[in-house]
Amino acid sequence: MAAAAEIARMSRERPPYYWQSLDFQKLMGEYPPPPAFFNTVYRMPRPRLRNLQENRFRSQIARAWEVPFYQRRWRAAGLEPGDIRGIGDLTKIPPYTVLDIRDSIARSPPFGDFMGVSPADGRRIPLVIQTSGGTTGLPRPMLYAPQDREVMAILGARRLTMHGVRPGDLVQVTRSLGLANGGFHVREALWKYTGAVPVMTGSGNVTPTRRQIEIARAWGVNVIVGFPAYLRHMAIVARDELKIDPRSLGIRSLDSNLGMEDRGAIEELWGAPCHDFYGAHESGMIAADCAYRNGMHVQEDAFIVEILDPETGKPMPQGEKGNICVTSLYKYSAPLVRYNINDVSAIMPGACECGSTLARLERIFGRSDNMVKLRGVNVFPEAIGALIAEDARSTGEYFCIVERSGEAGHDEMTVMVEVAGCSVDPGVFQKDLERRLHEALAVKLAVKPVQRGDLDQYTGVSQVSKVKRLLDKRQSDSVR
Image (tube, rainbow, N blue to C red; front, side, top):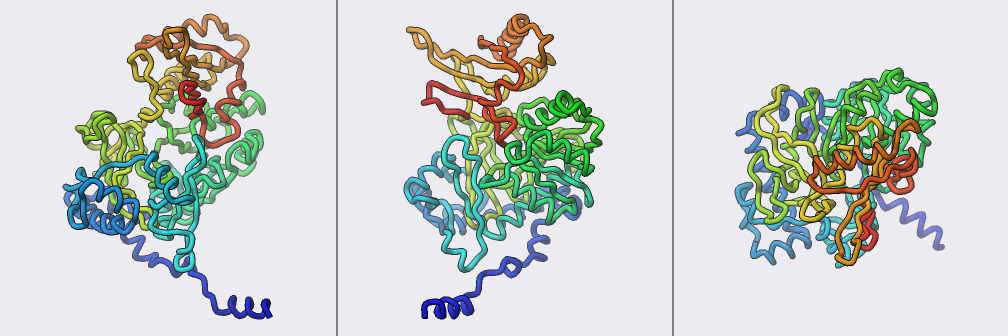
């Protein structure tokens, strides 16, 4: 009897089919994928772009008022529906950070109240869960509705096309395939909106690095997507272990979120241009550089990007560094309104040679919440890495340990750095690098040379997609 009832239920219950969940033609008109993007939004006159943003902003504010997280925070700030009428009122809204998201999850486990949907809504709309990288604790879950995923895929396809991906290309994706969003987001963008074929090798713990190189050579891969540290690691494994010159593989382009990494060193290894981009788990693809590689173009039909003073939270003038604060103009499941990501950058003045009218972000200089204050000096681990990459005697791999020492409790940082080979004199290298770091950062750091591969146990560069660079022993052994 129970089995018959279950069969009867299955025959009546109709799931929400993905292909019926969106008007795809309408969506592509609103958020044009390549190549239409380059003839529309990419060169859209600023007044018309502002009008587009205003309309979408008002819709996002209305959606956010339906979400308990925003209701609670905005009413606590003295706001009521109708108070925010346009982008000009944006600064009335209190920014929030990842700490507020974690608090939301703690208040309403396991998914929090910052999303306007729950898994139960899967009965009416197709939903998928992806998460943050989870390098500093339990990964943050995010439920994505069809509109969220499709617009994110279109934004990703724009970036990949700007970075040289063409229909028919084989694109090797070395980003993590699992709960984390990175790998699957790239796959969706490539497969649905570029005409290129994704080769989803995943990170080194999914497909060993030697095999990644063998696949790239055997299959004729054109483009590689990956974190800068792993792209560098792949090239060194190819050259030193497999005796294959990475430049001989014919890779046409590299796609990576560079931050403070030295793109020149990676390009020299591969003999291919390395392109920069910026995005976040919560938002999707925010900005990407073009062929001129002079700043990252913000996808302003999908985002409003502010730069905020890390101390006061007030908007910074154009050209000055501060925290990136993003407002999404398209998200349904979890609207983003003034999300302070804590990544440090600046809006570049002037226009790009490519002719785009879109604003440009500078490179990412580090995270303000990853910044270490040593004897009154602000130090970013990413800035240390950029200086290390300048020295050919290192592999470019490093790991920073901060601890309190001595009776006076002074904060000290030790930078472990891999040497490139046995011909390097570690004593001379140590002294030279300590002097260079002191000159550039105006604070004294201790350098500890180690052998190549020794740092993998700390950084995870050969295994995981998100590399760790800092252990702050002053904060309960928090690895970041």
